Image (tube, rainbow, N blue to C red; front, side, top):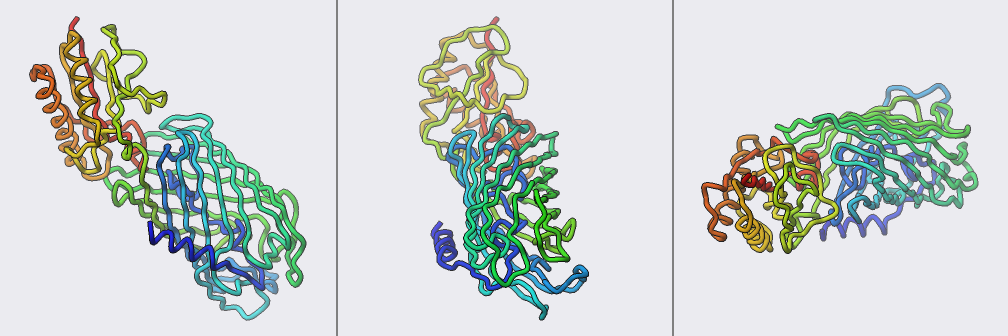
Length: 458
């Protein structure tokens, strides 16, 4: 965290200026990784960071031939005329179960121009703009949904001919749609970019850009055994009116990329990939490569008290007494797969520490004592305790880990509440019955759980 603050402070006090044209700054950097780090790379899904979950991201990309060449009237050639290394520092935070916010600080950290004619380039490195966004999920569950995203871009680059002199902030209005089919996720963003262009900057043959229609598509496939997602994306911006720009480039912009997201640990994800232009558009690179990391923390795993969530309706008729001191939340989370049990309780918040079968959070004893008393007061035929894990690690290992977790709970509740051990069974499903996306941090939190299935005597 200290290193993050130092980097952030450096970026804020080192703004870039330019005495030439700028394509990569002021929201014209086509590669913009999401601030919440969920699901895809630059394309938003409908999912938001859970309440109290934070994401820190650092991305870099190396792009070839993105700067304007004013005297090139015949189009670009295959030579490397310019190259830029840009970096984005991202921060995202879950405000509520349906709402997250984020901020991104992009910078140019290196540029190399191999063309001697009239051109545009930065006169020094540093921060090019400040981007902020807020996303509200309007509808959805673990398999997909719809969200609205409000974003803004504030240019801090001097003499930027694409925003104009005295320009105001750019506002972005978008809707995000996504759905999941087993291990395949598909997402789409559509929206409108409202600009506040300033006056034309003297000395540049470029008019400030006007409003744009923006859109993007993404799909991913999760290789569970490798803890890796393969991601394809396409994103584009189309102006609502004609704007004079570099002759060899359209004011429209379109790129596509192919990359991977690998979960190194439960909280740390690594990104890498490459992209190319889909047309000679503004700031569209001939090709680019990128890499990045997202570190996520907070949420359920940091709660002081575990939660047991009971479904509102049991599977079969039976006694329905309320369990005292159990926390029953409105946001009960995803439903459990069908199985045995007249009553089903999901123990969340015990959420064993990653890779642990015995280290649990404070408050677990009281919760299990209350559950034990509930079992003793009712005619219980059998209690099945299921251990579930996320998908990080090998399947066989996760099965054993889930079984150890179920056994730890079984042994404690049998011993402390003096239950008949023959009526309490420990099982493991390991990673095979996820209730949320194993491809992100908060989904894995939900998958690490203990499920109690209570069967009453008939």
